[in-house]
Length: 398
Image (cartoon, rainbow, N blue to C red; front, top):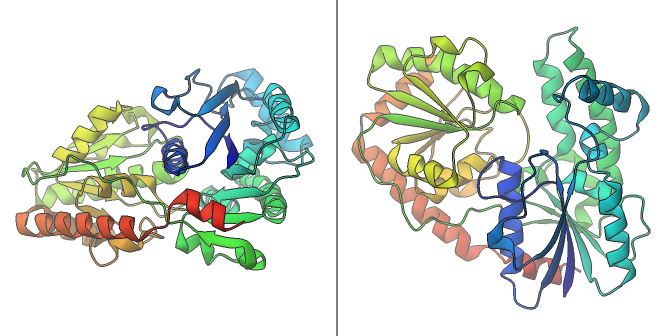
């Protein structure tokens, strides 16, 4: 079977959750016997990164984004406003419409021989949405895209430009999402929680679930008594920014009143990226780090925390922590669709007082932390054995 794989960003072991998810999907699909993969990717982040060397066995082509970044100065801001007012597609989709990439895809398809096209993430559909496609389309849905704009609308101040932008983008995204759902031969959700969304209700006859699971790390977490708490996430993504500001300004001061020895390490974010970050007690901002450094932090910190309550889809940060067998404290929203952690991870609410007491109690109980580690490791191994391979799911769903 020959697959044309459309990536809206360059896959990588580190970076955004989306990049890691695409990396996982390509790796999982490539491990299936009898599959040949050609990939077309857009450098959505404008990083100039090359295709990762460890995925060189996949024939790949990488193209720059079609629009300048919003934060790239006057040109980017003007482009964003013009696109918002004049284009029927959301900005995240317009960014993907690289003419050279689309021409390359047309050339590849004209040669024939493809058995299916995989659209990984909604915005990747922009690469083929105006083409006459004669082969099955598989949509790998990371989340319910339009709900992200709903959360952004709700979290913005009443008269802010961001609130207006989020409302317009919601309408565009919902319309575009529906177009892809209609065009797709099969829809594969990576979260059982998303499958229950009303967005997919009309398409239940072609909806499947392939639970997103991390690959268990060979090196596993062990208790060290550091009392270090780890959070991973970029403040460029507003659900993460909201979570970091709550961690730094509300939770950590309360934790440090109960136990001054507890420290918070924030990866993927700098102090100046969040508001009022000076009042967070023993907090260290590490910015972006290499994959090896991030793995070391997972292995040596005592607890991973995810107080994210906004956004949609599975939280890749939670999956990656569980891959190390790391004890986890998380909100119910952060645990959505991660069934194997039910009853094992410490569930917290966005109430700083109660969360602080639960976390300090946990950090001062080596037995509880080690028990959680054993439970998470065993649950992930069982879930991994029970999951169907991605290649098998795609082949047998057609």
